[in-house]
Image 1 (cartoon, rainbow, N blue to C red):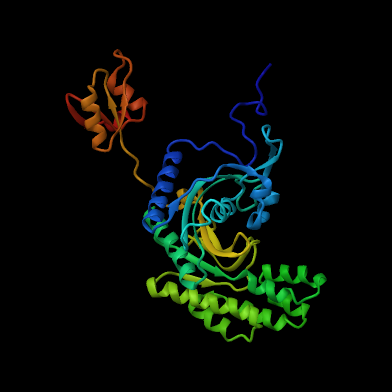
Image 2 (cartoon, rainbow, N blue to C red):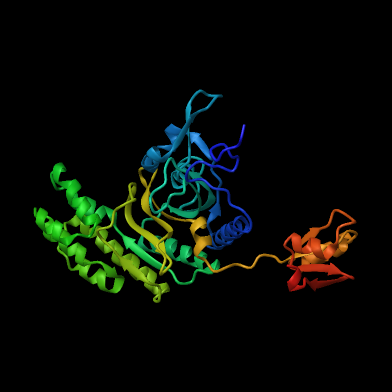
Length: 383
C-alpha cells in the first residue's frame, strides 16, 4: 500500500510538533539560564509529576484548568487522572501538603512541559514549556514586585533586555460586575474586553460611569495610576486599585526605568487570580513572554507567581551562540578530544578510518577540524 500524508510517521496531532536542532538545545539552555536566575534569588526547584489524580489536580486554583486537561484512567488504582495543563496548581498542592510546615514565605521554582486539550488562535500550540516561580505565604506589594523583577532579570539573562510589563487587577472589574443583574454582565464584559467605551455608555446602569473612568485610566503607569486613584470606587475595588499603586511604587524603587503599563479593566485569562496580575511582552512583538499574578494557595494562603514561556522566548530572544562543532579524524586520542571540549567545542568523532576528513567534516556540519595536532577552521568552500 502506498504511504499517504495521513499515515506518514512524521505526522503529529494538531498543536504538537517535534523540536529539532538547534532549537531544542537553545530552548534547553534558555530554561537552565532562567532557572539559574531563579535559584540565585532563593527560589528552590521542585518537580511535580506530569500526571495526578484529577481530584487533587483540580482542587483550588486547579479547577480553572479542568476544561483544558486530558484525562485517562489509572490502570493501577482505577481512578481518573489528569495530565497537567498548568504547573501552578501543582505547586499550590505541594505547598499545602508536602511543604505545609516549611518556613514562609516559601519560594519555589519549576520547569517542565504542559499539555492542553486545545490551543487558541494566538497560541495554537497544545504542548507548551513552562518555567516559573511562586512566592507563597506573603501578601504585600513587595512580594508582587519581587516576582516581576525576578522574571525581568531572568529574561535579561537570555538576552531580552527590552521588556514591557502590563499590570492588571481582574478582581476590580469583577467586583463591580457582581453588583449588576446576571443578565447584564455578559454584554458589559464583552464591551470592556473590546475597550468599547461607546458600548459601555449605551449599556448605562449604575456602574457605567465608573467603568468609563476605568477605561480612561489605562496606559503608562505614570498616567494610569493617578487617574485610577482619583476614581471614587467602592471599597472592595479601591483596595485593588491602591494595591496596584503600591506595587508600581515598589517596582519603581528598584527599577525606575522599567516600562510599566496599567489596564484596570483587563480580566481575560485570569480565572483563579485574586489580586495584581502581570503580563510580560517584548516591545514590537505580539506574543506573551510570561504571565502570572496573585491567587490563593489551598483556598486560604496568599501567593503570587509568574510563568515564563521558553518556546516563545527562544523565538524572540537574540540568537545564542552554540558550541562550534569540530571534526575529529579517526585516531584522535581521548586526551586530544577532551582538550577540544575544554575549549568549548562540540566534538564530532569519525568512526570510519577510511572517510575523507575534510568532506566528512563539511557533511556533518562542522566549522573546525582537528588536524596535525591543532584546531583549524574548515575552509568556507567546503561547508
